[in-house]
Length: 231
Ligand SMILES: C[S@@+](CC[C@H](N)C(=O)[O-])C[C@H]1O[C@@H](n2cnc3c(N)ncnc32)[C@H](O)[C@@H]1O
Image 1: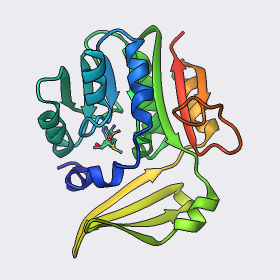
Image 2 (image 1 turned 90 degrees about the horizontal axis):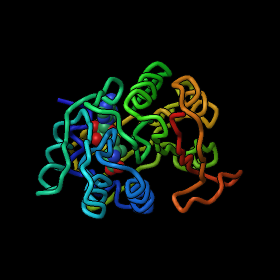
Image 3 (image 1 turned 90 degrees about the vertical axis):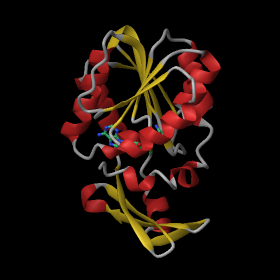
Image 4 (image 1 turned 45 degrees about the vertical axis):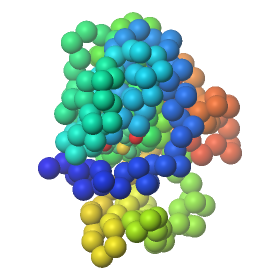
């Protein structure tokens, strides 16, 4: 069983607020040849609209069998190849033009070594000129002070947020009614870490946006939205 499996049933509830990333990733997919590779594809929240709106094949990699099972069922006959695997060591048969890692999934790679492996695997999977697009949130001490040790409730599901600054980590303990499903940990990355990872993996920053509408990344930004390119 993968760490994420117990969260599959209530995943939609907690991801419902994130919608604006979908057209951003779909537009990138329109500009790339198939197949598109999505790392940490989960239940296909982004892969399904990509396949539906572009008609292109998607290879989706995730290590949670439960998330993948939901995705396969939802995708119906769309051309999405849901593959069980780890984004730290994935490989594809042929180099591709676009690898994406939406919805802060890189924050599930806790150490520099884990992240470096993801970036190196993405770089190896790309053709020259190909792109690696991903987003992570900007860690804000103001937001953290506001939501540390708070309990959120949604339709019977709940999550408690706990910040662990010493380990640049945020733990989301989730459950439903009296049952605890477990803890999802997010390890936050800074802008310089993201750019260090792009650099050591041999990629280059093509663009950094502050949100999915491609607004410039500035001091108000709360999201790091990167397009990295393989030279
Ligand atoms: C926040 S969800 C994102 C799912 C999907 N991309 C979306 O935007 O809705 C994070 C996903 O990352 C997956 N994940 C976590 N660590 C992983 C790893 N090392 N390799 C592959 N997938 C991983 C989890 O199983 C989970 O499905």
